[in-house]
Amino acid sequence: MPEIKVEVSHDLGKEKAKEKLIPMIDQLIPKVAGLGAKLTNLKSGWEGDVMSISGNVKKGFISLAISGKMEVLEASVIFTLDVAAVILKFIDESGIRKALTESVTEVLLVE
Image (cartoon, rainbow, N blue to C red; front, side, top):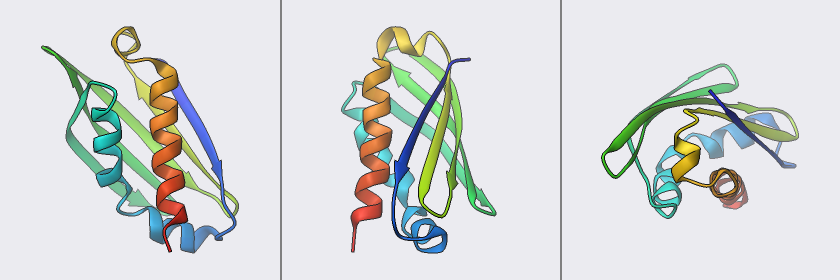
């Protein structure tokens, strides 16, 4: 399964960044929809400073599982997403990277 990884720097400190990122899944859904796909059955949960994510990406009649994690560090957030290779045939990897980076960045910038 290909891994897509993005890292976003911040100057908020670990706890403040984590606090802001808790609702991030809700922001990610429209970003992925903008790529022509739909996220369904999303589940997320925190264990320490790592949020685990699982669900499905649906495009047309194809629905495939995804999973990932978002690790909050003192000066950055690392988002790793595992996707089925076939997803990358329908959705450009750079688009996924951009959606993840923008979602994390937008959430961290909110006052």
